[in-house]
Length: 232
Image (tube, rainbow, N blue to C red):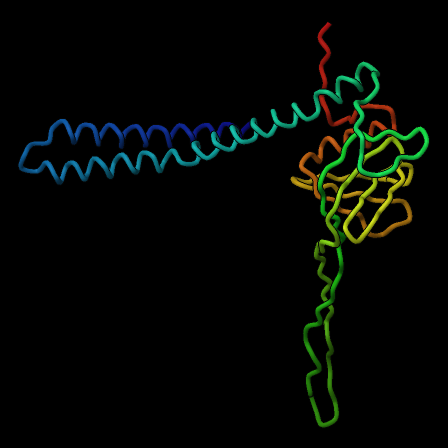
């Protein structure tokens, strides 16, 4: 509560200063005469610029909200046909994938993807220091770093039984019942498997849709993070 009040006061002060500077610029133009027209014109322009500078945080916040709203609407459009079928227990829309399906297997998504994995490399720092003839103390200190390494590019397919990555040089098959977690990021999903230390990372243009469908295929339920309101 106090934090919100402080934010409101800061915003009010910023708006007040901005408006005051803007009015000062307008007043300078009104009272200007031919003798000092150039000087007052420059002064008024400076006032306008400073008035805008005081509003920059609010402008950035507004633009950020507009961007978030566009991304949200985009996600809604991606999820809409699938969420409706999940809520009303209808069959999911299927596609004809580029791989051969098993008996009683259906495919739902296929898109271009890059398969990556995290790799660890160690850098050692330090060294032994001589404190007397023939006597050294110290050593090296290892520092472990993680890096995401692209491995192959190909097609990523989701079916009711598995995730298949059909790459140019690599083929990966992940059975849905082996998946223990799916984490989503801006442009990829990270799939953690039972008995595997390293997660499988796949790029995708619709990460939330992948998580929603994987969760539904494993549990038969809608992802809890999605807030759905049904109006009768």
